[in-house]
Image 1: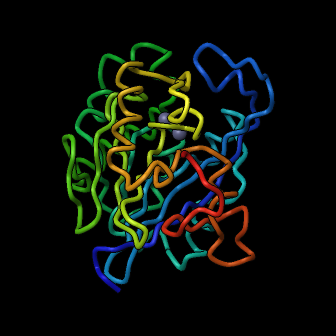
Image 2: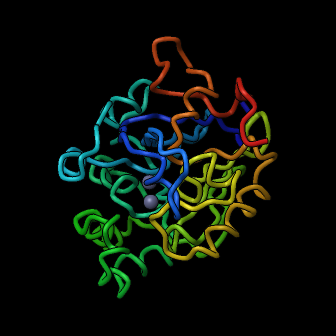
Length: 269
Ligand SMILES: [Zn+2]
Ligand SMILES: [Zn+2]
């Protein structure tokens, strides 16, 4: 296999039932169920494996009323990956549902934007509206990893390996980074919370957990510019991802989806 072309997987681990009105600034006229799925992502080829985000942990699921459907380690095991053997983890940002299982990856180097660390440890955390998405234990654990020389900081755009890049996309938090991956269908972009659902980037709407609205809206254009086409952008929490993309094996349907192949339905066009 070409070492700068990757397979990409979404691995669902959590679920949260909520109404559409709760997913958009300004609400939604169709107040129908619009649940969130929670994912970690795997980027790999024969030479290297990167995990994107670590998911929330059982404590956070309990205190925040989220459902842990599959353990993150169980999901990675379906792809033959053991967390302790992972060398590189990209943290798109430090919200509890993305940085809650850093302890699982005891031997990894963590890739993080400068601005995300400054945001999550600075004065903005004095505001409940901004701190609510963070768990102080998760943030503290990353601070310890800094002192262990286990964090590699990035400022804006960076190439982590041939065919694998991170790009700062502001708005949701101050330092979120999206992940751009070369696949056999071209550049795929893992948006993470730069667009929770397809509906956010397609309709120019905003999820209510927000740092800067202008940057969030500009970010949708950035995601599209980084991807080979709009259907190459993968939103961070949309259950449609598991409908559009095939499972690598039939028994993993509804759990793991392969994102480096064409979606079965036309998404985002
Ligand atoms: Zn978030
Ligand atoms: Zn999230």
